[in-house]
Amino acid sequence: MSVTRYILAVAALLALAACNRAPPAPSAEISAERAAAVTAAVEEQRVKFAAAPDPAQADRATAYQFSFNGLWTDHVPMTAFEGDVVMVVNTASRCGFTPQYEGLQQIYDEYHAQGFDIVGVPANNFAGQEPGSAEEIQQFCTLNYGVTFPMAAKTDVVGAARHPFYAWAEQQIGEGAVPQWNFHKILIGRDGHIIAAFPTRTEPTSEDVRNAITAALAVQNTAPATSSLR
Image 1: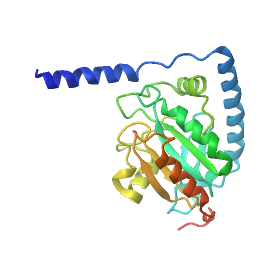
Image 2: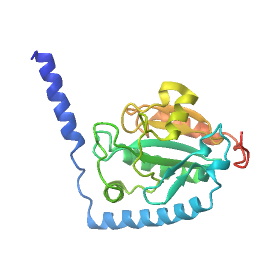
Image 3: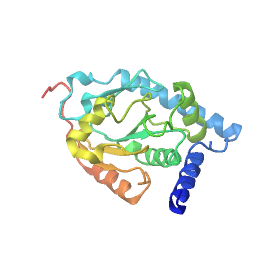
């Protein structure tokens, strides 16, 4: 084996080790605070999602036509976010980019009151870095990051079995919508159309992402009625 290939192999092994390293356990007090916040957020989401219009009646040109199975809730209908700006992010618990959960929660806290939402989509498509059960993912997100934004159940985001949302996204903007790894981000405007996609290495708190969110939030709400099939 050449020196270059050996170095690359070692680097790959170190990267996988880092991906499988769990974050430090939070204190009991922080754990309790996070659990209480998540419980309250999930209850609000259950009420909101139950009252959301039927995605089957949504405009077929928009993201509102889709619904995900939920991690905490029965489902996550995209119609629940009509008129809001939404970021859909495929996530994983054992990835070197898993700390991006912290940045996602940060921008969610900052912009949510202005009409910004995030939908996390756990996916095991990349190096098997989301192998856990629903309960394990719930616990991980709660205790380590206090995730209060909506989360889908574990879902395929690439390949023949990918969720229809991702097939639609690729049709809308091309290869940029296709996740190449965990924590790929798709930003949807108030009208239900895709504005931009950001690759894994672009941090949720980066200037590019923040600028895109604030510009999208500044746009007047022009979301179509869900009762209009097109």
